[in-house]
Amino acid sequence: MEDHKETAQPFTKDHLAMERMPGHWVLAQMGKRVLRPGGMELTRAMLDALAIGSTDRVVELAPGLGATAALTLACGPESYTAVERDQDAAASVRSFVERHGGSCRQGTAEDTGLPDESATVVYGEAMLTMQTSAHKAAIVREAARVLEQGGRYGIHELCLAPDDLDEEVKAQVLADLSREVHVGVRPLTLAEWRALLESEGFHVQWTRTASMHLLEPRRLLRDEGLIGGLSFAFNVLRSPVARRRVRGMRRVFRTHENHTYAVSLVATKQ
Ligand SMILES: C[S@@+](CC[C@H](N)C(=O)[O-])C[C@H]1O[C@@H](n2cnc3c(N)ncnc32)[C@H](O)[C@@H]1O
Image (tube, rainbow, N blue to C red; front, side):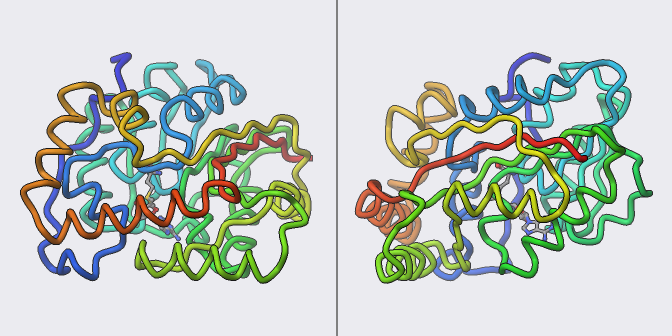
């Protein structure tokens, strides 16, 4: 099971109109599996930095469609537990990871219900960016509570650059992204992501940035493969609403590409 393309089964979110649906579910409905800004390349780099081994008890926050779960399970950890807020996604990830000895509970990352200091590794991708400041802090605090001392915490999120980005430009980027993605998109600068982790008792050991090319053709092919990429493109072309949504998101990502990046940080609990 080395290939991330073995993931949870797709599911239909027919209770939400595609017009109003959060952007990541529009992409998932169209067959996209990889929903994080730096793609699988940054995910693999983060997993390398986390160095998951056979004695690790791993918790993944917000696995989405489980694209990273397969890579983590391939490392043969002692345990793998995912916590996902969305009921459909949680059920889908559960049915996949249970076949490989893992589990997935429906719940929130800020209140996982997991015991104190029960994990050696916690990570989450493309899930803090969409939270308010208070929720970001609550989730990082929860990761610290669940981790044993010396445990590693990895994040992979959207990042604003440079660190001293003009406040007006920042506000415009956030407003434009949120309007097109249909959820509050609230990325931080690298310095702010670092400060957030440090404020909850983590020591940042590793950082890497990548371009925010989630919807660029080359990244799509790299992340989804030839068949997956073509099938995504075909599905989008067939649906006028999806076409409009995907074009809108790609346009705003391109408009702000000089100020938005993907970033991953790995930190240890002090
Ligand atoms: C953009 S998707 C990313 C999914 C996956 N991590 C990936 O990178 O492909 C965001 C995911 O975060 C989940 N999510 C958002 N807020 C959450 C929270 N507070 N607790 C748990 N899951 C959350 C959503 O349901 C969704 O699956």
